[in-house]
Amino acid sequence: MKYNNPIIKGFYPDPSVCKVDDTYYLVTSSFQFFPGVPLFESKDLINWNQIGHVLTRKSQVMLDKVNSSGGVFAPTIRHNNGRFYMTTTNDTTHQNFYVWTDDIYGEWSDPIYIDQGGIDPDLYFEDGKAYFMSNGSDDDGTGVILQCEIDIETGRKLSPSRHIWKGTGGRFLESPHMYKINDWYYLLAAEGGTEFGHMETYARSSSLHGPFEPYAHNPVLTNRNLGGYEVQAVGHGDLVQDQEGNWWLFHLGFRQIGKWIPYHHLGREVFLTPVTFGEDGWFTAGHNGTTLTSFETNRIPEHVVQNEKKEYTFENTEWGLDWCYLRHPHFENYELGTDKLTLKGTEVTLDQAASPTFIGIRQRDFNATISCDVALTSGEAGITLYMDENHRYDLAIRQIEQGYEVIERLNIGDIKLIQTIIPVEDSNHATLLIQALPERYSFFLQQGDQQIPLGTAQTKYLSSEVAGGFTGVVIGLYACGKGGSAEFTEFSCKYE
Image 1 (cartoon, rainbow, N blue to C red):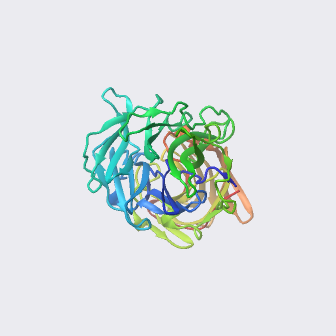
Image 2 (tube, helix red, strand yellow):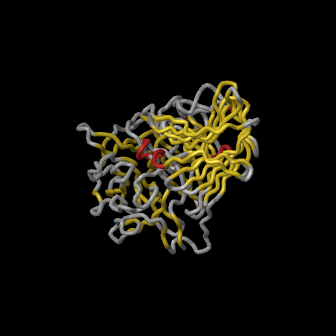
Image 3 (cartoon, helix red, strand yellow):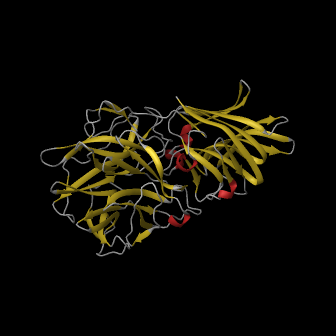
């Protein structure tokens, strides 16, 4: 059958996967958004359903006033002796930790911290022992992969941290994962930075502790030399074996705006690439070491159909799964109904690295129509296309002395401009509409059958290449202004 990449669209970066019986489980990074670490499951590797989040309590993760693209980095999910473990880094506090659960559909433990630096941690289990790995530096400041043995009950180190591989020389050696396959230990890593030079490399050893011999044809997977190719930044992968014994690599990548337009604003997404082992024990990946927007393969049964949800509404989404908040929300300001949302504004605005009244859903594709009815009592409320506090586009209704008005606001770095104002006579209600295309957003006020344009804005100014950081556009509903409140109904995000 033919499957299409990405298999999970939108801002879901740094995938890690494990298999238990006939089910696959996958986690991704969440950075400053809460709940932390989205958790998915699948039976066929192609169709993924979100079943929850790993970090659902304030006690599990510190997010107060963390910088955008700070917070929760690069999780790893593993299963051992009936227990699931997720290890990750809070890059803002510079702490590596893990949590565990015996019920994948239930709550996870409070964090257990490990006294080893670096980011992108990994857990490996063997013969009743647990090993912890992360990236770091040796005594000369060279980037390396560090490894130590830990007490899995307490996180206490049972051995010193020692470097086991220096990679192949690419910058930003990260994302280590260890596997025992047949008689070899394989150490998978990412190099080159999580951007256009990204690549996946690996080495192997007959010992868990090395020395590791690099694959002679590294990188095993990269799209870095494919100029004018839609999929870029391929790397940060995790291997998994399916029911039939086939191997696959789950990894991140991003879709740039256009063939010759090197910007991306949807964030880093989840891709799936076939892996093939040779008789010599070395493996290759993808199509000549690259990943494609689609693969034709007999590894996936013909009866499997790749499903894709085309419309997201209040009624067909779940607040605790599909939606997210900025940092730790003040839940007293949110009333989450089955077909409506009521938000209470505060003095905290979207311009601040704090916790404004905001709830968002990730933009998953380039072409979309986003609409919502907003009834305002006071203050300001509307839809924001949110990359970070300094890079976003707002379409909102706000109260003024003479009544109400609808505005389109552009926030691009230090430039904050209200591009258009339309008075709303004798009404506190507005139907807001955004048309999204790969290169441009268009903003409208819907009045009956009439769409009144407020302006347009280029998507590239919400890209990582302009804004920096590691996230993607989140479609947010927000309210601000002390004492203000707004009711949102008829929300729809429909993809072509």
